[in-house]
Amino acid sequence: MNRILVLYDSKTGNVATMAKLVAEGAALVSETEVRVRSVDEATTEDVVWCDGLAVGSPTNMGLLSWKMKRFWDETMGEHWMEIDGKIACAFSSAGGWGGGMELACQAILTVLMNFGFLVFGVTDYSAKLRTLHYGAVVAKEPRGEDDAATCRLLGQRLAEWTAVFVHGRQDQHPKTKLAQRMPPG
Image 1 (tube, helix red, strand yellow):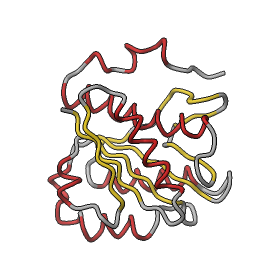
Image 2 (spheres, rainbow, N blue to C red):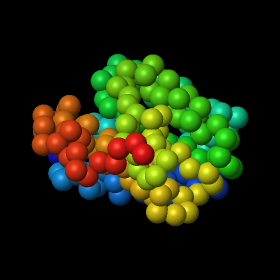
Image 3 (tube, rainbow, N blue to C red):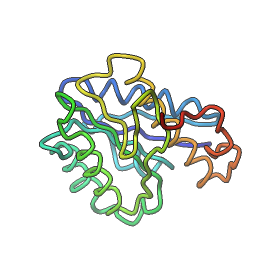
């Protein structure tokens, strides 16, 4: 069974909405169990339990939130070696386009790489002119289908990569689903 954790911090509810959509995407992959936890309720056991992790945070001056950073510093710090080699990705929201969401995703990925997570971006387009190279990003809350598709695609790709690399399920490799994928343009 594929085990995916969607861990998020949300000050206004925007990232919480994104987290639900990321979880919906992960659940599209068969034999996948998904947990959604806010940083306020998440435990070490949740992170140790998962095979794949999606971390979401509001953008705070181009970085992740202090609550998410504190979780990794204080809650997960002593579990450094227990989570090495898991697969992870990032998502973020800011008050508007150009608000630093991709920088926040990169900051999240940097934290995760320091814990030994194998991180990825998504090469597909989720909608016209919409990519997820650094993670799923939206301005404010996900409002339309393009925003929702971006979040769902991130969760789906996390579950696919986890199925492939942790459970050896080559049928879930994205290259076997080319007809479903959206190329540039």
